Image 1: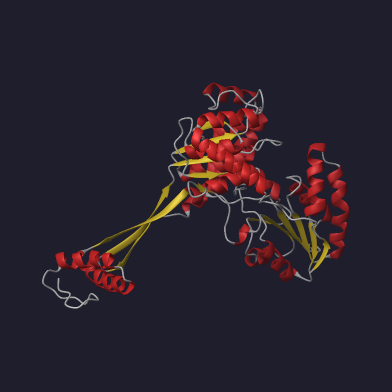
Image 2: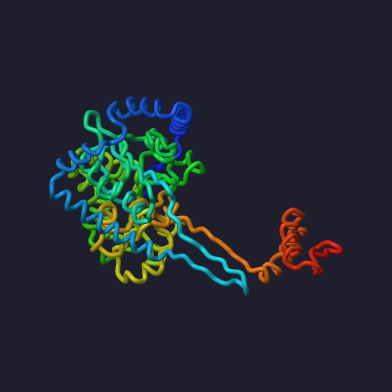
Length: 436
């Protein structure tokens, strides 16, 4: 493995000043509630209008969205909903007779309330609204709140409002940042307290979710987005370079990596990427250039197994294979948030319209978790029921194990059932003369 280009820096996800500020904000909101939320909205969002978006604003927003864009949003929504429905179909209740008279089972129960955060800021993240709200809706969550940063004098951009409403948000809040996340977590403005908070956001949003975890569930701890391409000599260098640039524009701290077995391809990509970045609009150019200059890596390997080992070690959020024998890669690769196979697809499809969720594990977390899905909104709970006959061996073993552990109260919970169900019989319960 040879680095033809190595990152100058690594993604920073743990700034102490960010943590300190978020901690102060969350503490103040916990004490002062809606008053503090409104104050932070005025300070950071420059917004003093309605917090809850009224129905008439949703209709006005829909009227402002061009019909072609509405069709595109509906297209993406249909794909994402269809994939989420397929995921839900893999979840099922079950029951099994573990021993005669003892039946145990599991049930799938959606959480009661979800809070979906939709980023705003530099880009209008319509796709994030579709990904989070649609998935919660398919899971069967009874109440879905969504929030997004309002723009001064405008509120949430019309296209985002249209998408939120289309996908089934019950309440939409003109709130961004820490204050938006906290409002959903605490149940301010008449909302039920969120059981889970989901959705991407900046480092302040990510830190707020991290600090609130435990009080509420979250989808994952999120850092800067990242993407890796695995390419062999069959790959199109222009396409590889374009895909790397497309992901680098996410931000200055978003790593992109190329892992290849072909040095000529690597060198063509290294030369071409800066040219493609230079052709971007100014708003995208500086972020992409910073990400490429400081975060990007190009790694030369001897063959596909070495390439796969690099991918498994990095565990990228997005992993795109542009190489021969795609079935081999699908079977071999083990650590990624979402996998894209072949040049006919691209991470951009997954980010916007294709179906699988784009809220994915970052910073190597794909080693141990997957991305947002209907499963995140569902609780797999268990139940059990026993006959008196089945209770007998259970109680005997429970009493003996409990006494071995020194947990006499547990043992007596077993003893009393033997005494009631089988009066006059003698049992070996881990104590002398144990007669029911």
